[in-house]
Length: 332
Length: 286
Image 1 (cartoon, one colour):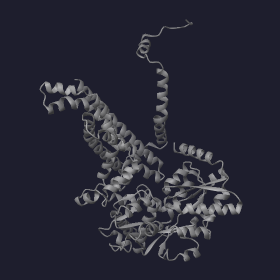
Image 2 (tube, each protein chain N blue to C red):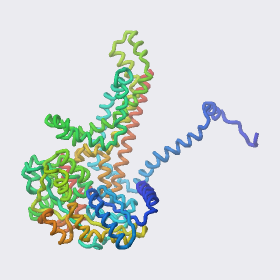
Image 3 (cartoon, each protein chain N blue to C red):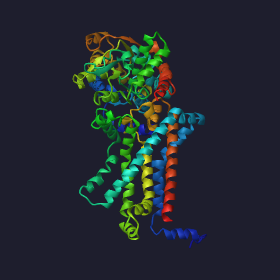
Image 4 (cartoon, rainbow over the protein chains, first blue to last red):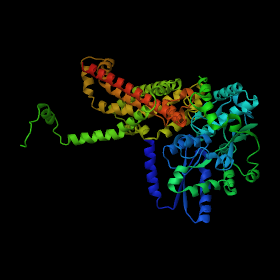
């Protein structure tokens, strides 16, 4: 049914668009809406100057896994720009839409920008939250989204678990104990990252928001107006939101050249500046150094290093019956 | 008369005689076609896709502890909400039908509000209202009443979306319920309580049960408002939320299993309610 519905939607969309020259659909995750609006404008200009062709880029945003599922079920995305590699892996595993080694086709694990997981607290930091250990103190309310439904929440979970692993020299029992206490302090598990931001920043629930650096900086600098402070923990995870061309669909649409051009464009100094303006950490060293005052250096670990990659992490921690299910059973 | 003509059988001619309106077959055809496309086809797809999964796996997915906890939470919350609406919805219907007062039409219109309001907006608004810094929540939370991110919050939201069902079901029946009947009861010496218990309540009971059933079924499938107010904690997870979680795990079979179980459950409960309603209708006649 879903496939049927998306096909009809697509048919309508392509019918409406048949007058334009070229169309590209970028299926992305939740907090990148504003970022890609700016990227698309810059890319359209660049592409027109370079090739003389007009290109219209459409964006679609929702939770990362939901978006991947829509593409699997027939949403004809030319490129996907999702929150985590596991969701793009699913495009290969479930529907063969792109090759298994998609992540090696672009530099830096196909992630043109990175982010990390940090804390947002109320101005003046009344609870004195400085590091991961402070989040499991009794009486501290921690706001994070539900790792079952949010990509950002999975990065946050892995950051917390990984920090505990590092501190306890790789002792998984100690890390599991830490993460159990962590989620005991969570009063609300929103469905997505934006939901948690609203819960914390606008509804005033909890003492600390654990989430995307870009989201925390956005709230502190542009929404919160001095009501919130950003806190960098001593260590966190390198979150790599990857991008990929969806081979099966670009070949069907004849848009491969534009789709590849679009993704390569994300690595150019121009697009890296746009990323920095939207609080995503640029990959280009020069661009990152230029914005050092926005993105301080912190000690980080990667998912490959501590969790053996996304497939492993997903299976052990987030799938049905995984560690997250086990520890949340203990809440009752 | 063409060759081989057989006079219509008596059963058929009786049927004809009882259908003086033309176009019965055509309209019935459209009805069945419409019902098939809109209702039966999606259900068939659900069942067929579930049938692709080995039954053992399906049963496991439908009845693992997490799923059972979600059904229990959904059913109890929906029953509680439908029960609240049964009492207060019936009261509202009574007030609107029986009394004339300024603002009555406005009140009447407001009842449909939960129908029209997108449920996501309802959920957000209620969460804002009852969360610890919200207008009501700031006074209730110190008293230990958590109207958001708790089961109570879920029940409040489900009561909100279910209200029109109980009022609108009862209203037309009440409108045709002649006050003369009550007067007759009174003139025969029945007190107010007796009139209510033996005359009014039995007459209205079947309709009230229908309203209850509708509100309950609506609540069981509600998703949009609940995701905002339940907090989605493992112990406040409604069954439809579990379906979304399973889909996000790319576990189509698991999602299907929970959906199917929920469907069977709500059919069973609605069937029970229907029987109860028939029984009370019989009781009323005797």
